[in-house]
Amino acid sequence: MGRCSAPGEPINQYALVTYLPDELGAFLDQMRRDLVLDCKARSHLSILPPRALTLPSSLAESQVQSLSLLAQPFVVRVGEVAVFPLTSVVYLELEAGQVEIERLHRELAVDALAFAEPYPFHPHVTLAQNFELGTVTERVEQAQARWRGYEGPREFLLDRVVFVQNTDNNCWIDLNAFPLKGLPIPQPPTPEPQFIQTF
Image (cartoon, rainbow, N blue to C red; front, top):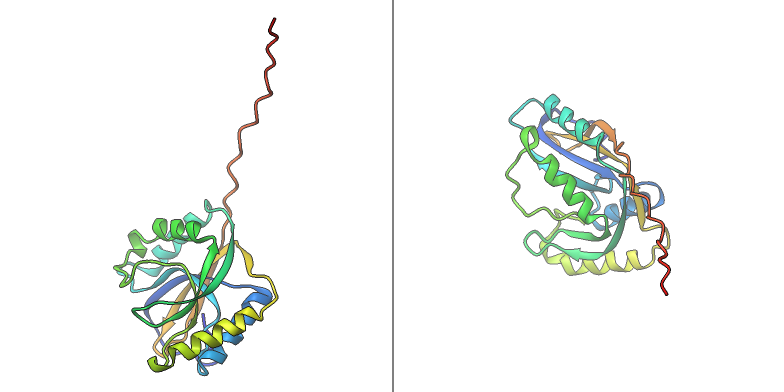
């Protein structure tokens, strides 16, 4: 999830994310660095926010892999700038894909990946956090201006998830990527119209 040149020692904190790709991802990566100068995080959506595991991580990975074989890729569209009032985190809302992400979260946050999350799950793309609280308005306005000026794609196909682990210097390491391999459910054929002759 980050760009650390020297990751520290792994700790018992894991998450499941998908990275924003291509032009959209590169733009948001730069925006994060401009909003918070020492930010090393790569732009992403969290499917499972950070959590400690009580069971071996291998079981958690197996659980993700099992679901990834059934889950279908879907389109995510990024929306407008917003702020979480309790934490002052500046983020981008989602205009499409939120329901599918919430379903993945619900189906995965059990068994080896169960965790008492401190906040209700709300899919989003973080833009700025861990900054002086008195500068929230300034950062929101800066983010809104930058986002209005972006002319590239605002949607992408979410077709893989990445299991990541944190370290003692807050450097997230990618452990394994899982493509979503579920096939679309075939639709039943449309019945032919029946014409009834009347007199």
